Amino acid sequence: MLCCILLIYFHQSGYKILTEVELRAQNPRMIKYPDGFVIDTRGTAPKVFWVEVESATKKGRKMMRLAQYLTMVQRGDAPVMSGIKADKAFVAFRTDILDTSGARIDHLNRVKAALSRHIGAPLRLAFFEVSVRNAQYHLDAVVRRVETVFPIGADDPNVHKLFTCTRTGLYQCDRFDIHGRRWLLQVSIIHDHYSWQIFDPHGKETRSYVDRSKESCFRYVVDTFNTEFYERPLSDVEIASFAQAATVQ
View 1: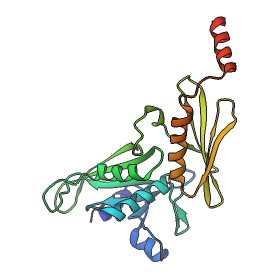
View 2 (view 1 turned 90 degrees about the horizontal axis):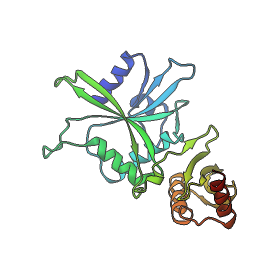
View 3 (view 1 turned 30 degrees about the vertical axis):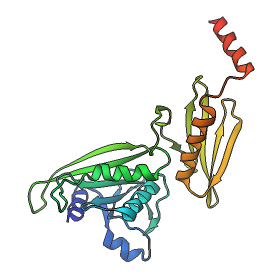
View 4 (view 1 turned 120 degrees about the horizontal axis):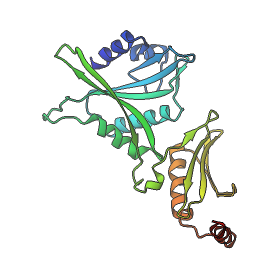
């Protein structure tokens, strides 16, 4: 019910919609279907949003599959359905839903916790908190909030930075070591695999590896930088360069 009312809300707000029923009929044998597509046709290029509406408690495999597909869409790897590829995803939920024991279901933190277990680098995702006026599901308010979700173990402020994606699917992120030197962390696709690289402050590749999972690449490239390069001592040339700069100042 909430999904239908929410899609109608977006339709009345000027967006084009595709329901899950339509997507299932037009795209048989897909592993995962969204609860709908919301398509913004107001700009020069349409923007397609993959919609997930949470109204019950998901557990185990279903919750991790939700996290997997939300991550895929946000990273630019959404599956094509009905000739359309979603650009971004969002999760909608009611804030007053109770489980069978009478406790409030915290959909926001449940989804964020599942994402934290799955992702290898920070991820930004929009959430819509929906309030209804009565049992007939008359919408009272739809509040949008954007959250940054961090992977489990990312307790170092140095890793709380987003990778930016180029049009060619190349992910890059600048990191600074304890001495203030800038390093480049990079994740790219090679055929059906992914590769990560670390470039030192001089642009020289110092580490690289190939993996089947993009999220594993994010996780390993950050971990490798933190353990091997964040506190790496200055070379004699760098020490001399810093000393010369200090003398000039």
